[in-house]
Amino acid sequence: MGLALKSSDIIFLDTAPFINFFEAHPDYFPALELFFNQLYQTGAQAITSIITYIELTTHPARKGQRQLVRKYRDYLSNSENISLFPLDMDIADHVVELRAKYNFKTPDAIQIGTATACGADYIITNDRAWQRFEEIKVVLVGDL
Image (tube, rainbow, N blue to C red; front, side):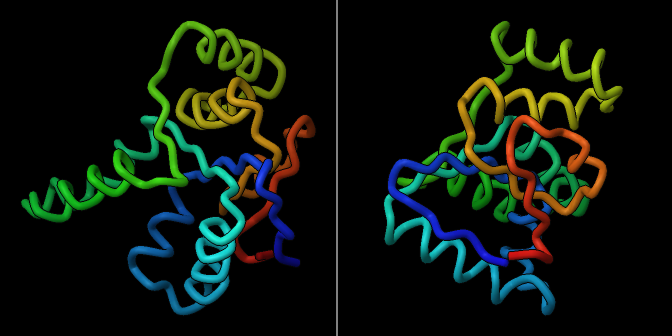
């Protein structure tokens, strides 16, 4: 499917796309590499939440891979076209609505609530359950 990104687009990235990209997943890496290249070429903005940072770094932290944790932190904190958002009351209000309406688990609701609060045009994830959310176009990594 792919996305024809415009400079004005805001794309929320769930944790899975980052993992699939960083670990060069054989099925998903080529499409994600094209996506990230297009992101930087167009100047579109990718966003994610603090949940992504937590999920992305927990496994390496368990394995004592402090350098990798730092690498992920630096990447998410210093990328020109990627912004990392903390949980605040505005996002929390969206999370409450999402949990009430869709019964999403709290971490998923924080992710989607961040996308909503930040005005995302697309959400990229590997979580099929997120496709129930109709307010923003949800794209599975496999459909890129």
